[in-house]
Each structure stands twice: as C-alpha cells, then as structure tokens.
Image (cartoon, rainbow, N blue to C red; front, side, top):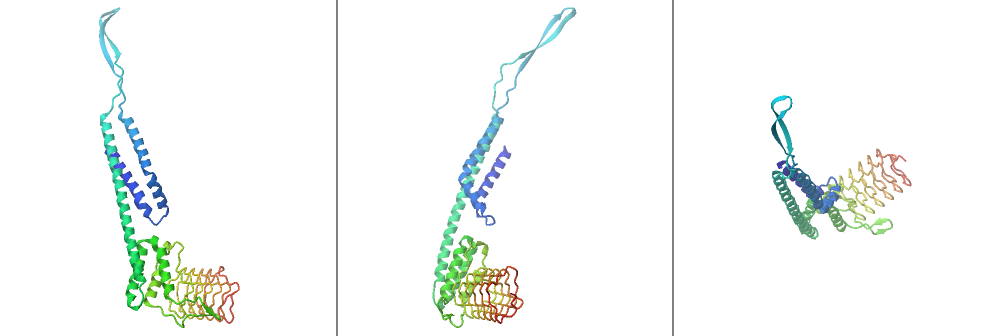
Length: 354
C-alpha cells in the first residue's frame, strides 16, 4: 500500500505541474489549452481514478471463502477379512461465510486518505501559484505605468528619466513577453512623436529638415526595438511610417520588418542595416548609403532610390516594382529569381541586372 500512496502522490504532483506550470511554457502554445481543459475537468478525472482504484482494491479486500470439510475414521469389519479395518469418511462442513480482509481494507482507507490529502495539497499549491501570478501581474502593471510616465517626460533636463523609462520597458518585455507587442507600439509611437513627420509634400519634396539628428533617447528606443525577440511580436512591427530621417545615421540599425512606409530617408546612412522584410513603400532613399544593407524580402514599391549606393546590398525576394534606381550603384548586389523588378527604372544606373 505504501507503493500505492507513492504512485498516487506522483500522479497528483504531475497533475499539479500540468495545471500550473505547463500552461506557462512558451515553447508550445498548446499547453495553455491543455491546462485550461484540465483546470475545468481535473476533479472529475480524479474522482474517476479514485472510484476505479477503490473498486479494484475493495474487490481484493474481500477474502475468498474456503470450503471446509471434516474427516472421521471408523473401524469396521469386512467379510472374509479378519479384524477391523479403518474407514475414512469426509463430511462437508457448514456453508462458507465471506469475510473481509480488514488489513487490506485498512490499507485501502489509508491510501485513499493519503491521496485525498495530496489532492488537497495540489489544490493549495495551485491556488498559491494563482495568487503569486496575480501579484506578479500587479507588479508588472505598476512597472508599466511608471515606465510610461518616465517616457512621457519632456525636455532635455529629463533625458535620463526618458532613458530609464525606455530600458524599463525593455526589461518588462523580457519579463512579460505577452506585453511585448504593446511595448513595441509604445516605443514606436514615442519615436514618431519625437521625429518630424514627412507626411506633407510640396512639389515632390518633403517638409523635413535638412538633417535629422537622432538624440540619445531616440537611439536607445531604436536599439531596444532592434534587439527584441521577434517571436513574441504577434504581428506587431516597429512602425515609423512617414517619419523624417533625412541624413540620419542608422548604420547597423536593426529594423527587421519595420514599417517605413512614406519615410524620408534622403542621404541617410543605412550601411549594413538590417531591413529584412521591411515595408519601404514610397519611401525616399535618394542618395542613401545602402551598402551591404539587408533588404531581402523588403517592399520597395514606388520607392525613390535615385543615386542610392547599393553595392553588395541583399535584395533576394525584394519587391522593387516601379522603384526609381536612376543613377544608383547596384554593383555586386545580391538578388535571386524572386526579386521583382517590374517597372523599375535604371537610367544611368550601374550594376543593374534587369
């Protein structure tokens, strides 16, 4: 019976792990579904197991009745033989009475009690973990609110405060991946509100300043957005549409999958920048430095790349439909059969392959 208690305890502990820990695992989202289903129906499953176990052991607890007999010897004479000879007679005993093996029954009751105690312990552990989770969520909410307040401070005197808010949000995204999409949106909104907008056009030119200087807090926000784990984005991207980044130094910047639709990147330094899968629809990249820049799978439809330097740029699977490459340098640019160049112009361009 000690073995029964041991296996029962192991089963309850396994159930506790399934109900509380596995739903929080990130490597398979299905654990949340399994944990939720077991969270609703586990009492029924435990009851079924208890009933089956009790039935089996109660059946074993009942002793099988054993038929009894009595044997008697009588001495009788047999014709033709001298003296008395023994005769053995077997007489059936009274009807057998079914008796309980009270030792087995006691062991069963002990095992059931231990199992019930273990189930109660598992419930207590689950409730404790739920309380801890609620407490952690409350702490995350407080940290989130404080970081937003820090990020919202204005003026050069509050630069350190804004930096603290930016890095607090990065730490929060690491501690609570489900909040990462919201944090990406917040940092993107911070950059859009800080940078000038290129939405207004006049005779084909934007109203952007001659040069965009990226302040320390802007660079910090870009760095945090660039080094995040994209696995938790849930289709959220860095959104920098219609921003002014004229002459900005973005060399080596991680902008994978970013939305730069309509952005003004004239003469921007994007050397070795990561723009894989980025949306640069209608963006102005006139004279931009795009040497060895990762633009594979990027959307450059109707983008202006006049006199842009694209030596060694990665353009595999990029969509260059109707893009303007007049005077651009595409020497040693990497492309493949999926690179779309339909309608793209290349007057006076060098290294163009289409």
